[in-house]
Length: 183
Image 1: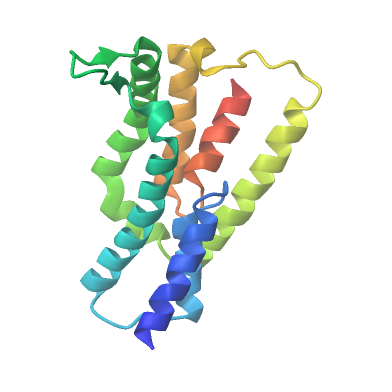
Image 2: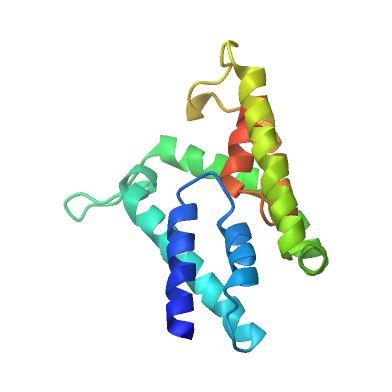
């Protein structure tokens, strides 16, 4: 029976990882209805492994677009400058959430990794998504490509990712999108 439950968790993760909704939040809520049995340490590892599979699928799908090193004819690798700059921007945007996450992870987990705070975060961030899109409707985008992202824009997006680091139920990709709409 636990194997079937793990499959259900995998399906939920696989679907929600591709959408701007929180896959972690959905698994926390799913656990309220389909309880996985076993030691907490095992369940935590299972949830990480399930998410790792979805993340690896994304990496494999976008590998050629993201990998900055090109090897041609066994020569010295060619480094694509644009892709290295992209990675720099990604890392810069991750710094705020990484710092907050490292410092306060156990506190946030104790406070918010439960079904009710997750459900509230899903609803609040869904409304934020709608309001951001309505606010932006009809306005001309200031930034239309990754190349145009400034350091301040990247940091604003990073600050929005802090929300996802604090509140499970808030999608990392959704927070990135809402943050980018504010720039």
